[in-house]
Image (cartoon, rainbow, N blue to C red):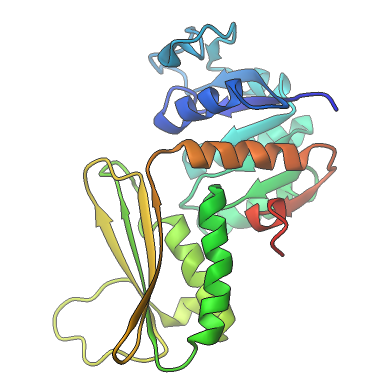
Length: 268
């Protein structure tokens, strides 16, 4: 089977650089293009420069040309930019892996519409370990469905712009689904002042921002006399990059459809 040519969006950003590094060493993957916003300092420079590698692929500011040169776009940018790239991928008939978080309901609906025409993997976290945690939470929620208060705690670096993180929200969605609850009505995103006693049916979220924390997520089940914690800690962005490339390989040969990492990993 031929290699999959990938185009990396946001190529000069922290995640973009990690994706490029991962793509250069991945089996079955070719770095076909790298692009970023006009005016970005690294436009016109080799995509592997920051990793000390000469790739022959130059970072460009022409998203259309970059996407046209690839089989699959990998995007971890911002919702507004990702949706623009998605529209181009749909027009050009290209697959897309979306790791961007912070979409509103309209943005998620737009992704679903695009997936009717092209194949898309859309997941709040591409790391294989995190997706294993999602599966573990399904089991834990069924076992600990009575007598345990559930809280989701997440920590990220000071530059993250959305809260709670997409991964934390997905953890909440998994837990709520298994417990037969609606996260929109049972989630508590902040506590301050006189809050009264905790309601048993709620799922709480706590957010920490600081330093260079890549990403820590914990689901806490607090019972009487015991606590169970299921935690994932990221030491670097490489797990997200490697999972994204796995998703790109999963999409090869598919005509359309909306998938997530549970599909990629065969965990349905």
